[in-house]
Length: 123
Image 1 (cartoon, helix red, strand yellow):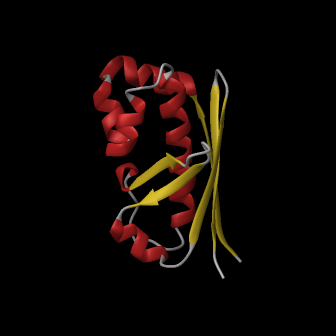
Image 2: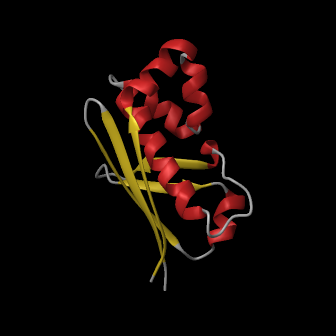
């Protein structure tokens, strides 16, 4: 059963401007600890953060049906499995609200745009 769906699209130049202005402080506002470790290894940091930003916005939109308050970016981490497939890791408090449901996410990006879709499914 599908419970909720979210989608987001972002212009990568917005992320580039923010990174140029605030540097790693901007990244730290968007990314969780594990994501920050990955970010530091990336050659194209703008593309990485743009994709994660879009994915987190999409996830936040799906969580709207389950949450009383807006979820902060750092309460969501978009990580990758051994094959590179992205998956969603939620903070304990947020995870408790969606209980036994699964959040699936897909990310795409190119030079000027990044997009993501998230879906909450369950029995």
